[in-house]
Length: 222
Image: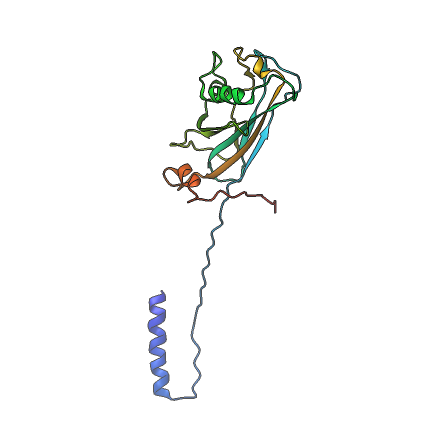
């Protein structure tokens, strides 16, 4: 129909030229507009710790370090990791606590090399794996990263789901000695997420190299 309309207009214009200037003609015409839009998604996660540790503990006791990551319902699916920092300090300044030895023990726990409990390696839920373990004896810290899936092959963290990094309770190895008496271990967590769809290979290496910047995002409800 549009092709016929164009041909009719051309023919009419030819007639006008013959009749001369000043003649007014009316034609059936039509104008159509089209528009399109695309809305971006977002990556939106939350991090909480459901554990509480108020009582003094001894080897063999259970503790609760329970960081939980959730991906919001409106979020895009994501690749997620949680950076964990464990810091040892003396609860009593004059105690026998040997910070350097505690850090060494903690490192073994994180790597699953200490005692029968295998500590952090055994405490992880099946969704997570540990990598990138580093120690700083002078600072009294052991740091590691828990990856959802693995570092090399991130798992797809679905929107509107959550996952516990560690099991509900963890058992303190019975092999700990008096150097751990009157000490305090504090845990701090930082969760990072990046869109899962179209992410590059070795995405976490790219983040660590600074090729991809991890930025915080705060959702503001409309």
